[in-house]
Every structure is written in C-alpha cells, then in structure tokens.
Length: 111
Length: 112
View 1 (cartoon, each protein chain N blue to C red):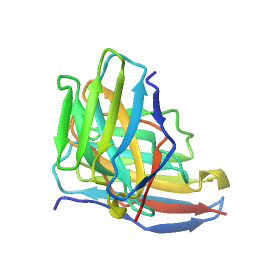
View 2: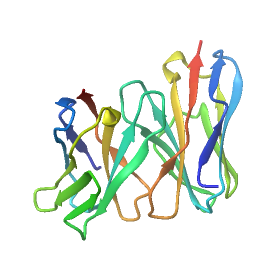
View 3: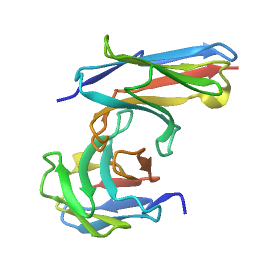
C-alpha cells in the first residue's frame, strides 16, 4: 500500500460538536503530519509526530488535539471549533528526513 | 524561522512553451527543497526534489536548479501540456526535512 488515506472526505460540524479526523498509512513511515490548507493558500504545518511522539506543535489552539495511537494511524480531535477553522485538513507521512506524501484531505466546514 | 518567497503568483504559457517558477529561501541551513503540484480539489503531489549537495536535477520534462549562494531554486517545465495546469508549491526544510515551509504557490495555466 503506497498511499495515505483520510476519513471522512467531508465534514460539517457545529461550533459545539466534537469530531475526529483519521489518517492511515501502511508504508512503514515513522513521521506523520497534520496540515491545514485554506483556499488558494499553501499547506500550513500544524503538528508533527515522530516515532509516535509529538515532536512539533506549531502553536495550534487547544481546540485541535492530535493523537497517534500507533505507527500507522494519526487522529485529529476537534472540539469547539470556530467558523474560521473551516479548511482542508491534510495528513502526510514520511520516512525520517524523507519525502512527505499527502493524503487526499478532509474538507471541514464549521457552522 | 525559515521564510520562502515564490514568484510569479500566476503564470500563463502557450502549450509547448517552457515555464519557470522561482523561489527564494531565507535560512542558509535549509538543505532540502521539494516541489509539489496540486490540481484543483486534489492532494499536493511531489513532482521533484533536490538536496543541497546537488546543483541540478532533471526528470523528463521537469528540472530543478539550486543556487545555494544566492539562496534560490527554480522549477523548469519544458514542452508544457494542458495537464500541467495546476498550482505549484515550492518548499524548504532544514536538517531531516520534517518541517517544510511552503512558498505561496504559483497558478500555472497552459493554454492550448
């Protein structure tokens, strides 16, 4: 399996909801990432996990909570989001120091 | 921290012509420079990358050049085709490449 998969593809949530985004890879990569991408903008790094430990948090608000249950899975838990958090959320994975491969993304709309 | 500037923001070329996109980075410690192509509604996909120990790399119609002294790198696409139309992002990272900083992107339109 040479792809990064993400679920769901689309998500609509209210500001009081709790939801989770999921990402999976079976390429044996030990680094996994969450990015946020707004329309017509580049991906913005949010979190990096290296060997299942959080190694980078780009000062992301606590309403976003990442989790790496094992080396193949990465979750992003969402709670009390704001409308401005609506965006495409991309997951990526890589070998340490290697090429980052992106998943198809979850398009999130916060109402 | 690292800052990457990318130009032009939009580029229109005639099919068959060449396209060049340029990026400048700020941190001389950056040593890994990938280029991603993102079609509308799709994921970013790596098209070529280069490390700082190499000055140029080519893959069929695509090439990347790196000038470490001037801290800039460029993407060259020859014999452009309509399917090359997309947004192209350059990026730079330091060390083992886990933290990529992206340029703002270039919208490439190839007119047939």
